[in-house]
Image (cartoon, rainbow, N blue to C red; front, side, top):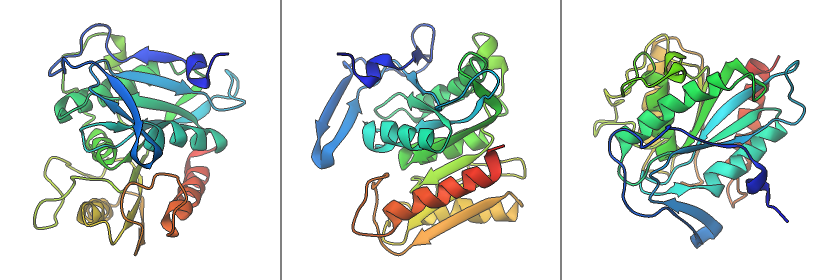
Length: 270
């Protein structure tokens, strides 16, 4: 009997070897601590399609590209990936799971994310997606990648290859869950994330006891507000880091999906 993953459409992001740095280690998916499947040594970036139930050519669905976290070392492939795709499907969104290059390859990951948005738009009709309602959600390092994508869309960071690279790689909206690496030591937003008035609308969730990411989440929010970009920040006192959608001892893990779901329905559903 085939598994669900066997039945899903998967597309390589690059037609041959990805440009820039590529690991030579063999890719592995290891199930381990906290019941999380971790993808190691990704050299062949891929997109996996999770179609919205009921989507059709006559009724294309809004869509979200999902960027798991993992410190740019591994990808938390189920916790912050496939489980998130299923949640988005339940909301009526098509989800596209991005497997980007790791480890230690932020430049390659941004290339992967930029090209992936163009590819999703290129396949929008085939995949019954509304190309004008295509957002991104990222967790931890994937949140950093999503913020970078949301502020680096005017020009590709690689030499264009084909028609997919002529399409916009700008997300129509951005969702950040405990986004990492966004702040300088003084707490200000890093210059590598040049937010301006054209940055996509964003919603962010963060906890105060997540000392790794709180300053960056607040910094991104404040600069969005200063530039009059529609945004929400949901700040909770407890919950730590890396909870994904899984129920925990603190309210944040079950509260944020409801808040993000309402935001999506209010702003990006017909």
